[in-house]
Image (cartoon, rainbow, N blue to C red; front, side, top):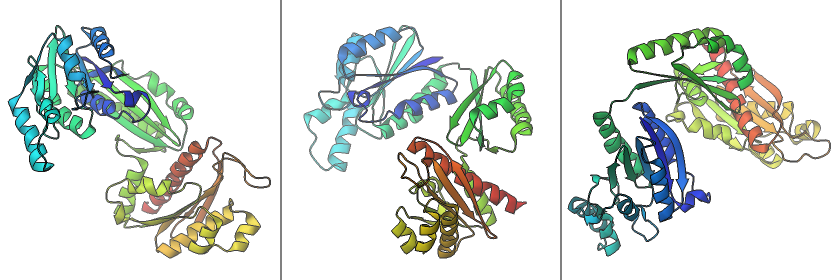
Length: 417
């Protein structure tokens, strides 16, 4: 099966909101063997919607639309559905009862006419009950294409995808198996990784495809196998992952989409009973944000100090003014002091510190744009390294944070041996 995902809303086209719905739907479809052929974002315009439906008709098996199901006049998806399917709107009593309960019992106000109109659906559609909100989903088929309309509110969309659409697709359609395996690597760029695994990649079976997903300081390798026999696919993928590990095992940190470096680090620190603190300047709390994005991080992460100014460094981290004056704030000496002092103040086993010039400008006699010092205080010593991450500013910050976690991971792994 092939699917197209369509988001409706001018707010997406003008950049007012970011479309996260399409990614969620595509992942859900992929897990059950349905390939997303394309993603489209279109305006709240009746003719545009009709033209899009006509274009997709019989070109794909499934069209999932999000947005335009609200109670206001700019939400026109229901009426447009009726026009495309030559249908009329009727009141669904089950939906009306649900809407009434939400408005009167939860919001504690009388239901108005706009609220009641949420219960209007095309007479020919199969209603997808929306437990999380007032706008029901709609399932309609024309010739060889199924059209499904969902509310644009993310948590409502997710509920309908998980509890209505996916179970229905699994029950009613035969689909091939799709097996994914993600390998997370850190410390080497995409071109270097590709060079190291070129021979391995050239020998992959025809039914296994490799994709490179690079980001600052990290590269995800995603293997995708498609076929009719799930066991054969899984075995082939695992065999190739094992052979890949023999080639680049030194930079592999995980084998799962959600197993990021910060997740891996958390597991290592927790297993060893070790603790961590950070003192950040140029990264502005980015490292702490990455660490605390992992559930349960409080078991090993004690806290962070963002000391962006020199005054904050002297007052909070007790860095001597003479040290900054002598070596400059962007220096190995200051980074070392930041790591050692936050380790002492927070009483942790490890501590990371960053100081650098993320740009976009540099003062005469000061560190050039992109120069960063990362210090790592371990139970035994303080390690410091200098890097030049170039430009732009966002790249410098992201690469600094990633490199800092990479340095920490290597140190923690050594301590485990």
